[in-house]
Image (cartoon, rainbow, N blue to C red):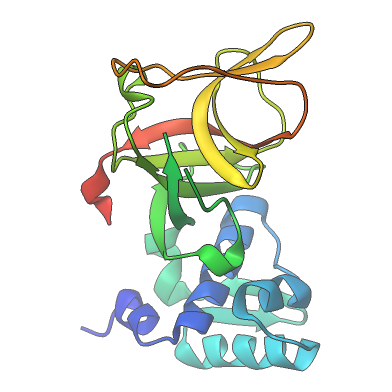
Length: 211
């Protein structure tokens, strides 16, 4: 049987990224991505480049167009309404990639009950043992809600001098503390006043064998 999954597998990597973006925007936000957003995930340089990608997806039977709006085709609608495709963008030490379209390795379907509407999400793979007593082991997949703020107690992905790390966030009057939670005493708290950028908050820790 020629299923929607077969259709997706027959796409180029560039078109797969575009389709995942369209699918997520339609399901999660009820609107189509812009041509600029499509070019951001495909590397296109002009509106024409994005339009050609859309035309190929229409021909593949995965999407339909209604004027400038895009929607999922009936062949894909039933199997896609309860999930969105969340990108896996690499590994993080817990050092190093953080969310960036060019770092996307693959997409993992996630229920919209977990990846809730109104926020952007990405996956990182944990590396190291600095958070093993917080339930994060080396190899685990971390579902991250992309945001630049956090509350004390949140497990965060923080960017420090261009390196990403997962730690427990704590804010005091004078400093930001990123605390490990590990039975390996080599790991120490990181105390910062500047040069700390929050990339997101860990909302779920999932098994390493999902991809």
